[in-house]
Length: 410
Ligand SMILES: *Cc1c(COP(=O)(O)O)cnc(C)c1O
Image (cartoon, rainbow, N blue to C red):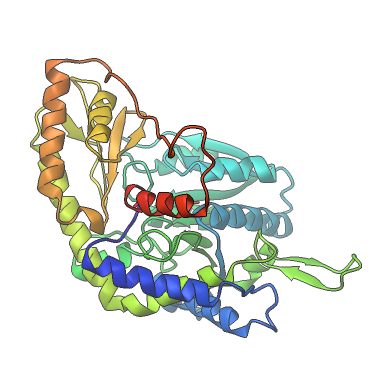
């Protein structure tokens, strides 16, 4: 994942966000009586995000609620901890287990390790979507939760959320939908007319959703949202302490003090882009993704993994080592992610790619040609060198380095 934004827009968008971040850099929503501004920003970011993801379509009246977190991983950690404690109260489960497809993000393994939850991963179907029957077979009386992704990070494919919702409802367990990647794309792609299956709170049985504002929401890094269907579930996320000498302490997330500047930055990003901005961006990146997908189909020796639903296109090869292709692409400056089962690589399409599709496809064709002609690993390697050897950088040098690095990390 690199920059999700590009072009002429980039400069104005970045400077607005940077300004918002620095204006509120000293604030901390832990002290909600002191920093009411960021408390309000957080509430509005959560409400706007919830409205995008079906909170208004719940017939029993919208009770969807949540918090901002530091990223997808924290949102997922919180959802797992909350579901564990909710299920302990609701069903008396003390040896919790959760079940998910092999395509679900590695953050769930982290949650399982941190919170002592047994994690069962099941294979996906031939279409690379969650195999609902396989998940059902693993459910037992200790199961607290199942997970579906919309889409999954590896292949950009949406799991059958409606069927997972029915399954979760029928067993009275939680269903978390991972919208970290899709939350700020799918609602807009559907509006534009792409066939997007149900994925949000409008689906019965969905108990929580994680969604990253710092990916396609184009907010500063370190911002994500965790949402719950209702307060009854979310209350298990909070830690309230009365038994220390510091007085009443209530914290909703993993961090205690939190950076209010990032919350203001996310609010500024969402407010300035608005529905129109996200729609326009989605139109561009969806068209670009389809072009890339078609281009890869046309390259002899490559196959696209499954049917990408969104803006992630994964591809592999039956006749050559795709990782050698990846090495050559890296040397040409393209950063693609390596995947396994099957061996493949993916491109996560952002606004940066909109005007370079032809170059990308040409470099990919050339790389495939090179590997076909001469299989084997690339020679040499990359070693970054910071200034003159043995010299401690002073402030001016560090500033120069920061400027140098701006392009390469974007
Ligand atoms: C990025 C991502 C995560 C993890 O988010 P971080 O912000 O990297 O912590 C989880 N799930 C999916 C589907 C993602 O794309």
